[in-house]
Image (tube, rainbow, N blue to C red; front, top):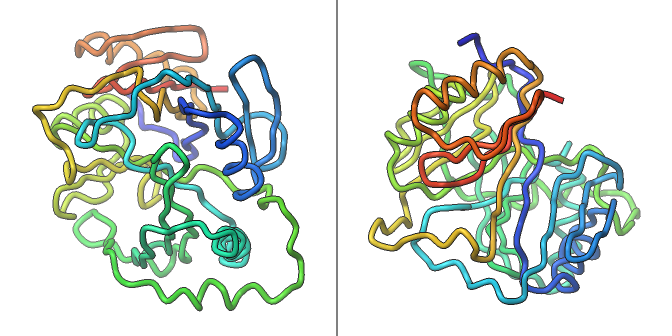
Length: 286
């Protein structure tokens, strides 16, 4: 297979939610995302109110709660264009009484953690300048150090307390709870062809296209292999990777089939494949 394009990115995530009204209040009123389209039990959201969507929310009031310790979503990482725009959303959430799970300086980025109404992990983050990232022996150096929040909040010097989110806000990466790091490497490195960007962080492996710190994070920190996942539970239904190369996509589909991965759907410019733990990964070239 050819090299994965450097411009590959995480395009969107589909989430099964308990109550649409509650989820819309969180993602739109509190976070600031805008509604693009609404059909029956489904709502599409983006940062600018236009396609492509970043979040697809699908309401299912009878869906079971995801059991702790099962494989699946660890967190969705929302990337802001700068500290100022991260501060704007953080302070709005803080002033609204939202509880946060943590604040970290990862050396390559600065991150704030919380949960959505259904318990899905959310990371709000901004990248540090690439020239400050340190690479050793082929991997980017990352850590989880205490974050000085004043570095973020001091950036917000204007009086603009608009309700939206900056239109250049995207999904920076997806982080997964996995059953086996070697199997995760087989799928995301050997099949998807993302390079291993960090392999020495305890209990985790990170994968990226180009020179980014990571587009996919995987860990076994909370995974209990004895507990079987329920694919119909609340939380992630699927996520989408955009790989802007139709020929690469065809090669990827062939390699997936040869390696025994289940192809759920295949079209000219998109495929949907289940990874090593049954997560549905949509890959398109549009």
